[in-house]
Every structure is written in structure tokens, then in C-alpha cells.
Amino acid sequence: MRDEDKTKEQLIGELCVLRARLSAMQLEAVECNEMEAHLVEIEGRFRIMADSAPVFIWMSDAVTGRNYFNKVWLDYTGKGLDEEANDGWLKGVHPDDYHRCRDICSASHQRREQFRLEYRLRRKDGVYRWILDTGNPRFTSDNKFIGFIGSCVGITEKKEAEERLKYIAHFDILTGLPNRTLFFDRLEQAIVQAKRYSYLVALLYVDLNRFKHVNDKYGHQIGDLVLKESATRLGSCVRDADTVARIGGDEFNVILSRVGEKNDVQHIAEKIIAAMNRPFCFDGIECSIGASIGISLYPHDACDTDMLIKKADSVMYQVKALGRSDFMFCS
Image: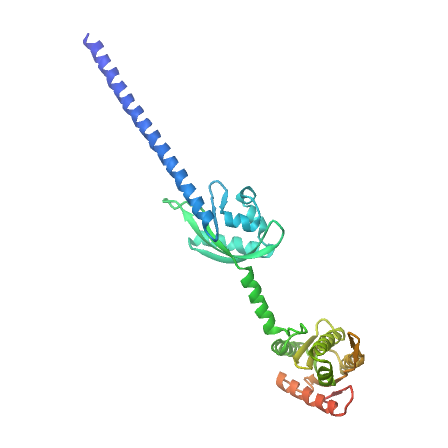
């Protein structure tokens, strides 16, 4: 009887242990369910907060390979979450920006630091727009990388304004030609190349002879059309590698780089004179302008930009004093 009683006692004890374990498992299950519900609630709050934010919010998951994007991002790109979730957004990064973006994100991961980059993103309609993206790598408590989280803002208007300012700084708004600033830079570059390879550089200082008369008689609208057409005619007389610049008012400069000999310059000067002697016709108004051209050569006439310009300008006034469309060399 004692052995049977002992066995019963053992069975009862084991049953109690099993019952305790079952209760613990049930409690853990309840806690897990509560935790899961809590996580779902937190995720729901995050989505509400993210979708209510005025910026793009995104999060990548290195474990599942899926990404999250808030409503602002999806509205901006015109795509659905399923289209973007599995690295679909990377396909929309401009080809010229793609590798730079990957490299910066990789460096951020390795260095455990925030990244900040600008790139162009293609929307569903095929249009590329600029965004500024700021993100941080995410790690678990045991330092395992689990992805990134970040936010973006659209900066297309800012980029366009920057490009506009850059354009205004280097180009003439009316004619689209390089302005004085870019002209000096191009002339210096041409002289550097000429020194290295023993080329000639020709500078043609072009002044429109009767522009002031036409502008005063017919008004600024016709005057502006004359300047724009003059820029077009000058450009048609030179090579793609040469530079036609508007220096100001009715004065233009032409840089002929990599010139072989003086006769090559004379040929282009003759073409310009012929082009500028043709009548200008706008809205039934016909007017004749003509041009005076002073020409200086590097290194024959000067060895620096300032003296090259000064000599070409001086010769141009000598031609202008003769009262006809013509050109003249310094020497």
C-alpha cells in the first residue's frame, strides 16, 4: 500500500507541476495576446501619426525586406504601398543618383550615423522631382541591423530656383548667351589651352553700329528682337567649340579657340560682317544695323585676358570711327 500511495503522491505532484506549467503557459499566451494587441495599437497610432505628418515618412525592414511609406509619400509618387513596399521606390531613383544613394545609405549603416542626401525620384506619371531625404539606421538591443527610418521633403522648387540663379549668374537673360562673367572664364580657359598646345586664340570685339538709332526710333521691343537675332546670327558664324557672349548693351565678344592661322579668323570675321549687314525685319519693320569688329590674337598681340580685351576694344573703336561695317586686326 505504501508503494501505491507513494506512486499516487508522485502522480499528484507531477499533475500539479503540469497544471502550474499549463497555467503559466496560459498566462504567457494571454500576455502575448495583450502584447500583440498593444503592438497593433502602437502600429495603428504610428500609422495615424505618420499619415498625418506634412512630410514623407518611410521605414525599411531588413528582416522582411519590406518597406513602409506614409500617405504623403504615396500621394506624392502617385503609387500604392504594394508598388513601393519591396524596394520599388529604388527603381524610381534617377539613374544618375542611384549609386550615390546606395553608397551613402551603406556608409550610414556601417558608421551607424544619420545620412542626408538629395536625389531625384520618378513619380508614376514619369516626372522626376527632387527630394531631401534624412534617415537613421535602426539596430536591436544586441546590435543587429534591422533597417532604416527616415523622412523626406520635396525640394524641386528650391532646386529650380538654385538653377535659375546659377543661370542668371552666367548667362544673359535676353539672348541666352554667356554673360561677362562666363566670358572671362571661357577666355581664361582658352588661353590656358593655347599655352599648353601652342594654339592661337582670337578675340573679336563686336559692336552693333546703328543699334541705338533703331532702339530709339522703334522702341525697346524691336531693339530686344534685334539683339536676340544678332545673337543667333553670331552663333551661326562660329564653331560649337567657340564662344559668343553678350558683354552689355549692343556689344558682343567672340572667342575663337584653337585657331590654326590668321586667315581662319579673317574668314569668320567676314561671315559675321555679311550676317550683320543683312536687314532685320520684325512686324513689317525693316532696319539695317551693321557691325564694327576689332580683333586681337593671343599670343601675338597680348599674353593675358585684360590686355587682349583692351586691344580688341581699341581696334573696334578705330573701325567704328570709319563709319562702315568692317573688321580690323591689331597687327
